[in-house]
Image 1 (cartoon, rainbow, N blue to C red):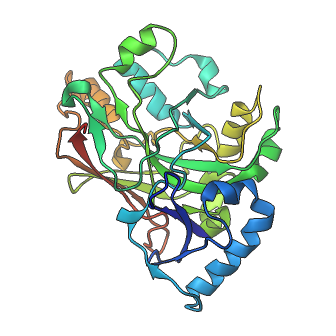
Image 2 (image 1 turned 90 degrees about the horizontal axis):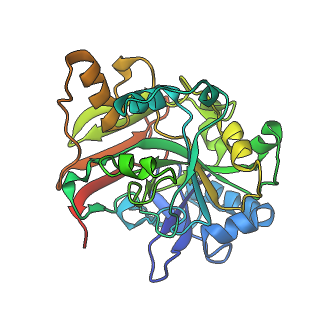
Image 3 (image 1 turned 60 degrees about the vertical axis):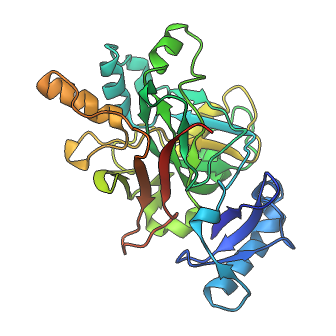
Length: 326
């Protein structure tokens, strides 16, 4: 099943079921006004949404054309947004750029930070920054949306709490991050609003590409129309989503609608390209002594998409342009 939130006059938008080919959408106010309502009442609501999905794909219910530009983030406001770092190749490269080594404990204990979740960007909303010299970077990720999660949940139980899967652009302002981390209290200015794919999908929609709580498909990134990376999200994963959920819930409950990101998708094989600019810059420094690739500038465009084995877009594309604030 594929679900989207259409932009309306309200902040939380309106829930719609989207066809498998992403061409049609069926608003479902009689079932659930918002995705958050659906998640809060998943046991009762999911079968009704699944029925609409079957009818929509069969052309047996009313619908409208689906336009990603009219889609808000699946959750325009989320109760909680937690981003992990499941790909140690990314962690190693970024830390190397700061002259920091990878502690051995990070191989068994995931990194995770809590981001701002009061404003979540739709797939075609712009990346806004007041200064293009802040080192604007994209970070292409996969994420999950959970049901309620009990405190201290086991990894095995955590897998059953995954309700939806989606793509994320976790924007970073690289030149602001080092000073913030040096204070020893985490991110604030270095992590502005993140963007999300036009649709979120249930795990069964991925078929064999969803195994062991991993999405085993390449994540394609284009920058100004040029291929920048196509790292496989199922390769070089140190921590699957069940592990990330259990880590997040170690000392607290998680509320239905919590979003947990994988961190930047990254493969050790350099032929896969990159899902963020800073990784490419680090490789350039290692190979030639200096970074040749700059960060995003105003007017630059980023496209993030994942296609299945048949070449069909699974989540729709995140397509954003960098603009000045306001």
